[in-house]
Structures are given as C-alpha cells and as structure tokens.
Length: 223
Image (cartoon, rainbow, N blue to C red):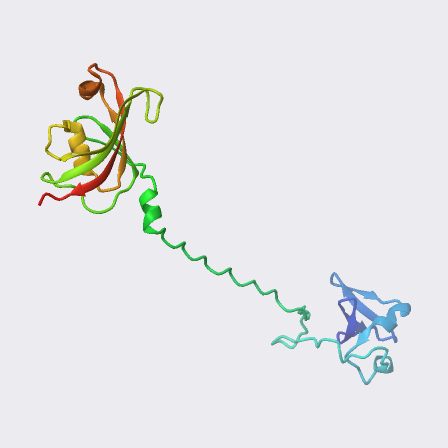
C-alpha cells in the first residue's frame, strides 16, 4: 500500500496500489478503482519508481494543487466558485419631490378655517373665509353684512338679512355678541355663528337658537 497521493478521482485522493492500479479513500477505507475508470483519474503527482503513474491520461494544468499543512500531510482542497456575471447594481433612488409652492394670497384668503371658538356670551364662531389687514378698534366705523336663520346656516327659515350696514363699533345698533364678533374680524372675513337662545331673544323676540353668517366688508378709521 502506498500513502503517496498521485491524483484525484471524483473528489477523492488517489493512491497507487503497488500493482499497477489505483485506490482511493472512501470513509477512511482504501477502495480499488476499476480499470475502466482509470482514464478519469487526474494524475497530478508521479512516482518515478512506478511507470504506471507517468501516464498522462489527462492534463493536470487545470487541476487545483493539494495544499499541505504544517505537518507535511496533505489537506483537502476547497474549491472557490466564482462568477463572471457582474453583481447587480441597485437602481439610483428617485429624485426627491419638491414641496408644492404656497398658494397665492387670494386662494389663501378663500381657504376655509375649521377652527371653532366660543366667545364670552356663548356664541360659537367658525371662520369660513379669512380676511386681510388689521382688526377694527373700538373708535372705528365698520361696514358689515349679517344674515340670520332659524333652522340652520343657509337654511330655509331666514329671519334677518342686512347688507352694507355702516355704523360705529360702539353704536347701540350692534348687540354685545355682534360687537364682539366685529372686533375679532378683519376686512373680508366671513364667520358662521351659532347663537344660543338666551342671547338670540333680541332678534326673534323669543328664546330660539339662531344661526348666522357675518361678513366684515370694510373698516373706516375715525378721523
């Protein structure tokens, strides 16, 4: 039995059996290789004392060399699989979308404001159109429109409709909740109002809930 590795067969080390044949290790045991398979053995190491090992039945130039450990014993060769295909390249991220430009002042003024606030008399306010400029002072004169409904805002039971009313903010023509509303608005602003029954009596002469729309048309500074 020869312990010198002379080639490879089907991933196993091949040894000369000393009788012109070959053996290989299978789970730690030497097994003879049938002569019919000898042409498939890659002979990578030759032994000058045995003429059978000098047969070049296959080129060994493409056969990996068997590395040896520090003790001189041969160690199994581990093949490394490479690919000629290039690695996939991730597509570039899409360009960031720019923020939309701010709306023009005219559109911003028409944009509804959903915030709702309650004033001291208990009147509920909702700004439906923004105004522009300053709020009136107590000594200013104002022009406004006011419409009242009994059932709902823009309902079918209209009770009051006044347009182009001009008076001083301190004028007794305005009740307390109307005066407070005017002082909170700027020119062009529109508010929807829900007036409790206890503060609505001055309009309908009875205690019923009122619904109104008020528009501040203009502010006239008192010269």
